[in-house]
Image (cartoon, rainbow, N blue to C red; front, side):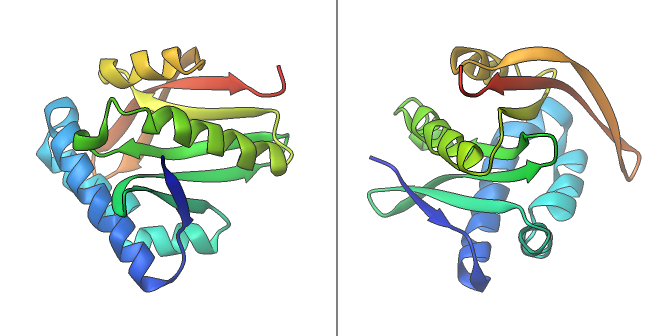
Length: 166
């Protein structure tokens, strides 16, 4: 059974960033290459970036199981009743144990409590395993998004949406 720990303070931010670096290096280097992964880790997953995101109102949670950090997510409630699930990760050795589904159920509760009627996320177009998982969890592909993230890199993603209150 998963537990969800709200990330706040230096130690929890450090644990989240450390987990992010491990997950990203394992999962994304084959998809976008090492240089882009390192750039994105520094820009979006470093301790500094996580602290800034939390200060701007994004809620980070560590997913733990049996006392171990197994994954994390970040959710931002936006205007117009939308919740942006900007981070949603499970460490490789914990995949296939239902933690993604459990985490999404918790995300749904947070989004509904925040007044959202949909959750959306973006996923790299070449991340076929994650796309399949999101579809299995009930997300629908709503089209392409290409975003310049600086450093000569772009995120070439699909926007996927989960409708709440159905």
